[in-house]
Length: 167
View 1 (cartoon, rainbow, N blue to C red):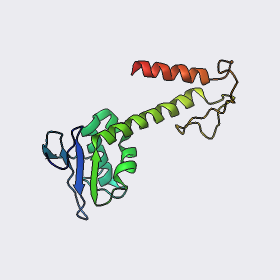
View 2: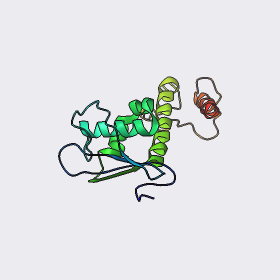
View 3: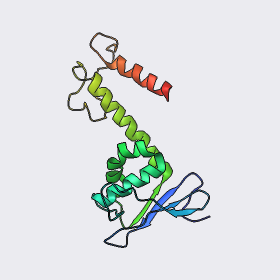
């Protein structure tokens, strides 16, 4: 088996040889290796990494598109660029399982931020500085019931339970 594969998923890898377009390789669990297709949205010159420009944006978009599909790629590729691509050194290596774990966390953060905008603005217990950040904003002291009128904490708990049930 190729050293750049795992039994659990694909690996996206490349070596940055300097200015100009770079190649990103996709290694599958079966040991098959192929060149990642370039989805050209920002950089007609191709892939790059190690900074936050157009080549890294296209690398992020193309990797996510291959790994998780078009919709999530379009929704999250700029965040992925900053979290994985812009900070990469000359050797790029990203595991599919790391991408999927990162994406699940990002989706949860985005859901919480959207929930906060819809439900926490104006809540007596919400910290206004934390609303829209994706971080918990409730400052409710222990012992105060969450089902009091005007307190949206119960709404959040019910929404999270419903979200888990919807899977």
